[in-house]
Image 1 (tube, rainbow, N blue to C red):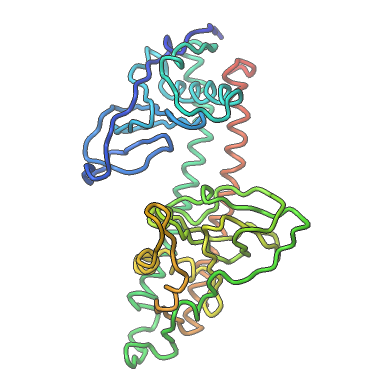
Image 2 (cartoon, helix red, strand yellow):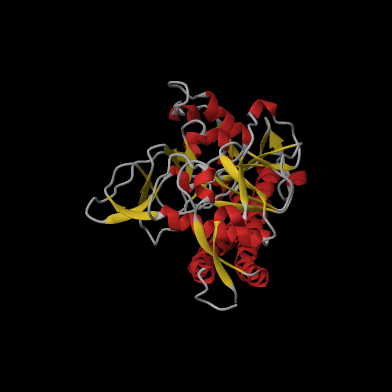
Amino acid sequence: MNWHTRRLGDVLTLKRGHDLPGDQRVAGDVPVVSSSGITGFHNEAKAQAPGVVTGRYGTLGEVFFLEQDYWPLNTALYVVDFKGNHPKFVAYFLKNLLQNQQSDKAAVPGVNRNVLHEMKAPVPDPNTQENIANILSTYDDLIENNRRRMDLLEDAVRLLYREWFIRLRFPGHEHTSVADGIPEGWRRVPTSEAIAIAPPTFLSDEDEHWYVEMSDLVADSMVIQNAVKKSGRSGSKFRNGDTLLARITPCLENGKTAFVDFLDGGDVGRGSTEFIVLRPEHVSPPFAYCLARTYHFRENAIKSMIGASGRQRVQESCFDKFMVWIPARTILDVFSEYADAAFGQIRRLHAQNKKLRVARDLLLPRLMNGEIAV
């Protein structure tokens, strides 16, 4: 292998992204990329694929590779010239270089691209670049495949929920008598009767417990991305089977909702005070989670928000007014059996992805400094 220490500016050229306010975006399939990744879509691209984007603010080390034309936002820097280097290698190279920088400065308020261009690191020959990119891409491809499978599994459960419990096309609905709009054996009750809202839960302050931040929830998945063990007992308390619903703007509007399934046995976890814990009482845990993901349920919560602009919070009393179904037990059991199996598979795929990320991140610096021959 042939390695040479080079300036970052001799390997690539970074440029600041472009403004695109939300009210100027037009529906399309062009990814809009910020310092935190894809945050939306537009009908026009500002940069051609392949693309490499990194954050301009906050901690360094987040790098995103794009395989289609995209719009980089002004909170990010993007590569406009790869200078003959392998684009995917450049993404890994930049990630490794910025992570090393991050270890010296944990929080960088703003990144100057000219300063980055002066950073130096060893760079291999093009053939080695391609080999390194192929090795690391194998991990990322597996992670992405698992993520897509997780999305499909969750989508399938939520589609079934809508079909059975919103459209009321449940098995045998053709032969079920309906009185006053209520199928035989079903009940229509306030949410707070079917689901306990922020139920009191005892938590000892003598031991460490799993803790979940709002940042551990993502907008489009049930999975809690990370959790850490901390001492203390303040915050919301939850158990396996609970749903965590963001109570604060804009987290709720953005869709932050999660399903708790990572605790051991009867353990209790805790999290941000900005979660509302939904604990099913007369419905099943998957039913409660799917309900919390529905448009009308969320709109009811959003409309109840009060407080100063930008810090508005959901009023728990809003759930006393929102009516939900308690299905016949046989129908609920069939749905829950299907959903439990899908949610279990999602949990296992998420665990696999965590291991794959650890393995990839251990390999990354060793490949980038030539410690491992390819």
